[in-house]
Length: 452
Image (cartoon, helix red, strand yellow):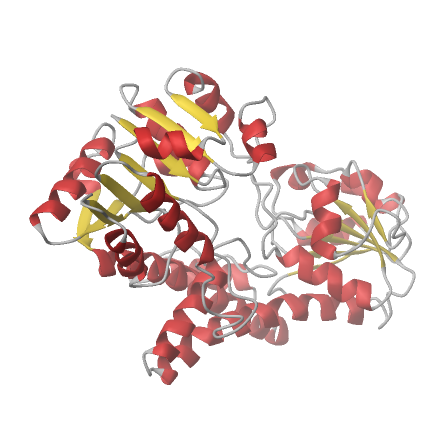
């Protein structure tokens, strides 16, 4: 069997690499029109940073895993075609700011219809609105010319930073297909691929619409928990309670559980906000304004948390950060990834720039070009300095802000950092990974999230 994936991003690349590793009898080709990205996948500097990804790619690349810009050949030769293209939130027209922009999905569907010469199974891998499969099917069917196209939904449930382990030992694999005989036959072919390493009891099969909606719902529920504990963190700061202690106490309740109850400066990433906004738009489209408002409040609370953090920095620094050097440690939206999409650090940095602060930014994996692009500043903008270490960023700073929970930040020599800072030296832990009482003993005016 040969399969291909259209889209060589954070989902397509790692997913196909693990399939190739677990199924050496299957030829896997990842294609993308972005030649620079494909060149990176074929080099020692992969475009995606994920722990363990390099080893998997090196094991399989050239054996049964290939990265190419030749979309036509990949479509012609593959029995199963995965769609893993970008589905950003629309920035224009109807549904702007909420609905998913599906132009890339439609373009890929039309490309498949134009190139394919035989029957194909097309698998939605991107996170898509409910009933998108119907649109793909209509395009393919209208241009079938006797060919049989079957559409499956196989949403990813990857957490960046743990994507390889999530793929190797998934909680579940979800596959949705048509209830027809042909649809079930196609579904079973995809089940057989995953069954090479995933226990069959963890492979869940549903109809197409349930599969599509399950991904949006999963991300919405996870984001809801984060916004819920972040809302309590504000109350903790006002009352003198400790949000970590509150989270531990409620997390021991087996009905609630401890996961996604870590208070922070706010959630980011490519999925949570985009998927919730998509869910809000769907609810509005189907005449459910109360449901839409409920889920939109999760986004509103996340925005509030980010700006509340920035405001606290401003307030503690005597209501002005003008011309003050502020060290931002971490720019990725979470540790163990170089992804900055919707990172809380971007929002905090922009808030501080509006107050005329001087920013010194360090992240172990995010490149300077990406940081400047996200902030909309040129390399000549002296307000933003991208540093090579936490110590360089912190030197002569008025405050240090922890914005990504990188493990290396836990082991910094804070006594040395303190001595090189302006006094009083402030530290704001936006991820609650540091020992605040210890920092205060050193001399810092230290603050965590949800701690009095």
